[in-house]
Image (cartoon, rainbow, N blue to C red):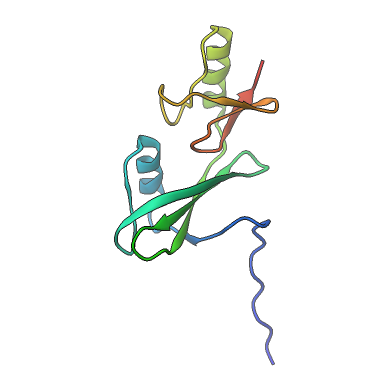
Length: 125
């Protein structure tokens, strides 16, 4: 008898299927527009899970089929971190470089994190 394939270790967090067009979905996610589901309907954000390497995963659910999808988000770039550091040096509230000036970064421990995308963009002063 053959063995069943091992399931990926998700660390206790929910998981879903990969989206067919992650770049287009990320663009719509950052713009705050509705995400269309590949199986019809729209995708609703269930949660964002920050990962130890600085990246994150958005868990989405289709409004018509209840199928869950994952949208991976890459860690902050040096340029993005530099923008946040400069905003801190200027004495202004740092905002998410990906979501724009409407989304402030929040302190989580010693890090400044965007609550919408789960990405840490630098250390709090």
